Image 1 (spheres, rainbow, N blue to C red):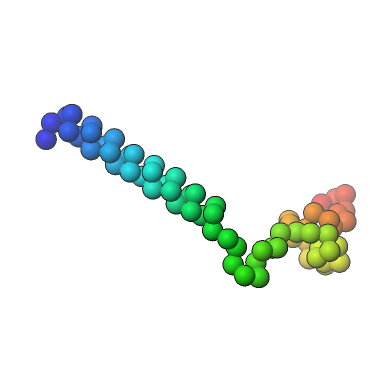
Image 2 (cartoon, rainbow, N blue to C red):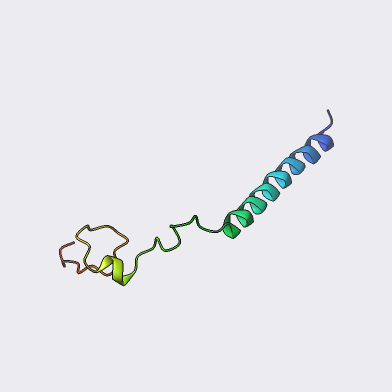
Length: 66
């Protein structure tokens, strides 16, 4: 196999993988959230009385030592 053919095959494989990544990323972003999972992020109503100290609870009163 000549060096030119190897280079063309390598470039083709890289372009195929790149195109696959771009298409799957676009499809992932366009996919809607499953039913019941639309509002999974932190919000003031859900997190203000939460006793757990998760990193998502941006509304918690943090102690200065933490």
